[in-house]
Amino acid sequence: MKGGGTSLSNHLLIAMPQLTDPNFSQTVSLICEHGEKGALGIVLNRPLSMTLSEVFEQMKIEPTDPLAAELPVLRGGPVHQDRGFV
Image 1 (cartoon, rainbow, N blue to C red):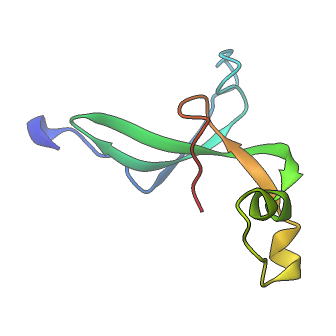
Image 2: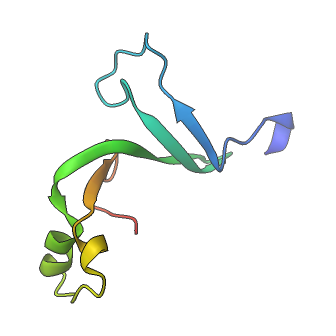
C-alpha cells in the first residue's frame, strides 16, 4: 500500500465485544484483499440454513463428495449477497 499503510490481506479480524453493528457483531472475518481502493473480506462464522448440496442443485452441479455436499453455506457478509465464493 502507498503511504506506508499496512495491508490486512490474508489476516483474520475478530470483532471486539463492543462492536454492536449487527452485520459484524461477534464475527470472524478473513480479509481477502486490502488496498488503496478498499477491502474485501468474508465473514467466516455466519452459517445459512442451507448446505452445499442445495447450492449444487440450484446450479445443476452433481456433487462428487457426499461429505462436502452436506457442509453448511456461510453468509459471507452484508455486501454483494448475490455473489458467492468457493
